[in-house]
Image 1 (cartoon, rainbow, N blue to C red):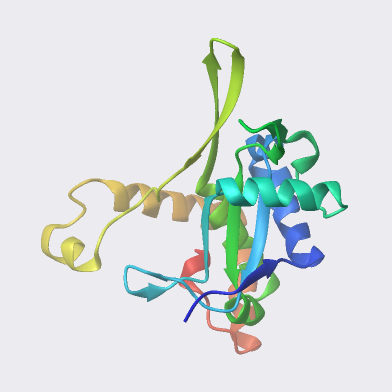
Image 2 (image 1 turned 120 degrees about the vertical axis):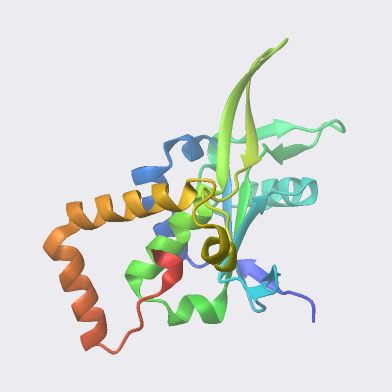
Length: 198
């Protein structure tokens, strides 16, 4: 089945803008397009709630035309350039694709966490060229990549799990009572704590 997508509604874009403002300042300099999809993408055999990728050349051209017609895209106002044929297009940027049904099932807290997670994959670097400085968009992998079974057999052989544990403990300490209350409230409301947001 092919994946159908549409531009996300303003409330979803608002969450992206809030997370960018609070935690991903370099992304203010490039277009970030948020799509909703009707089909979950499968990544490594598991359905993904969302995924991030770079904008395609076709999207950059098409969205530039739509933006000129009044379509709102975060950070697109300063993100135009001219392509080789002399047409206006968006500069390099990112697309976040979110599965409709998964998004509908998430609490507000988990929606913000999911958006933050996907935006963490989006990295902007300033490089110097012979014509001056240029922003380059890159995709960033996860900080921790490991299988449970490898940890069971070999322990934390790369030290990544230890760092993850320390980060989680630090978060728990700084959140203190608020974290405990959030967990207890989610249990009271019958929500399952979602691993993706931790």
